[in-house]
Length: 298
Image (cartoon, rainbow, N blue to C red; front, side, top):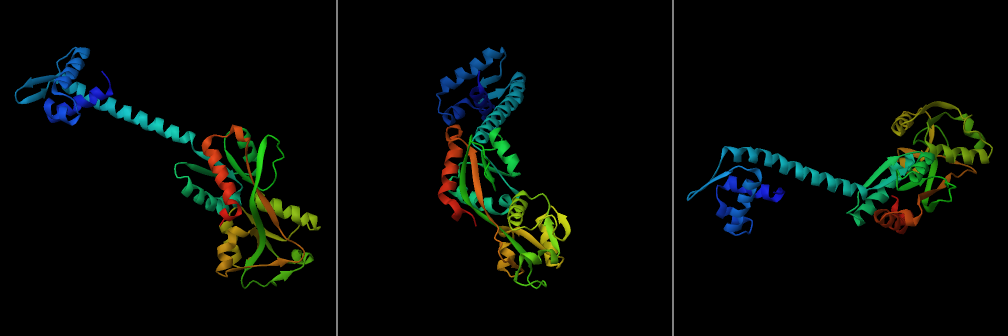
């Protein structure tokens, strides 16, 4: 007795006819009758009463129907879970630093998904360090980071650039262009623990002799929505990823404040394990992302 036999037995009980079900499942009436007999013999009970009017389920048959239904549904659930697990193996896990995950990567990922609809993608926000660690430990497949990992065991691909800009409300009392030495004169809103933003800022400001830590900071927040709300209330100015304020700049809610002699732009690296360690789904995704390149980012 197998799952298919139980399914056919259920059909016979529901239809109260061997001949109708035989036609439905493309079996001869004789073959179906023998199948029912084999089920009865294997269980040791009469399950159906046969007559000229059709068949009627016995009390023992009713018990079999009850459990057969549970067995069939559990079997189908098992298959569904196996398929989900199989698809999970083809899921491409992607990590990226905060600003990229929130603003840049979804755009290129949308384009990739349109070209590779069979693949599933999961995207997580992570620091550069944690992303590299997760790739090494097979927790994620592709990482987007703002600095070279310096790990010879990993592949690095420059996939684009991200820019950090100094922004204020459109009518905030600050010139469109200021000098480096004027930075301490203004009140700043800072994003706390946003590695990509802070990494770029500290690197560039240190290079020109300005201390990021010594800027006149009103308060620090870990939410970009809080920074935007504060900007709109004229509480101060802020360094933010360009992609995070692109819409507001277009709508002329904000303006970019240029800093004479300072440009903050850095490479976006796509990091993976070596090619021969990647499965087919990751390879296809990687190839397509490289093909799209900078144009893949909105």
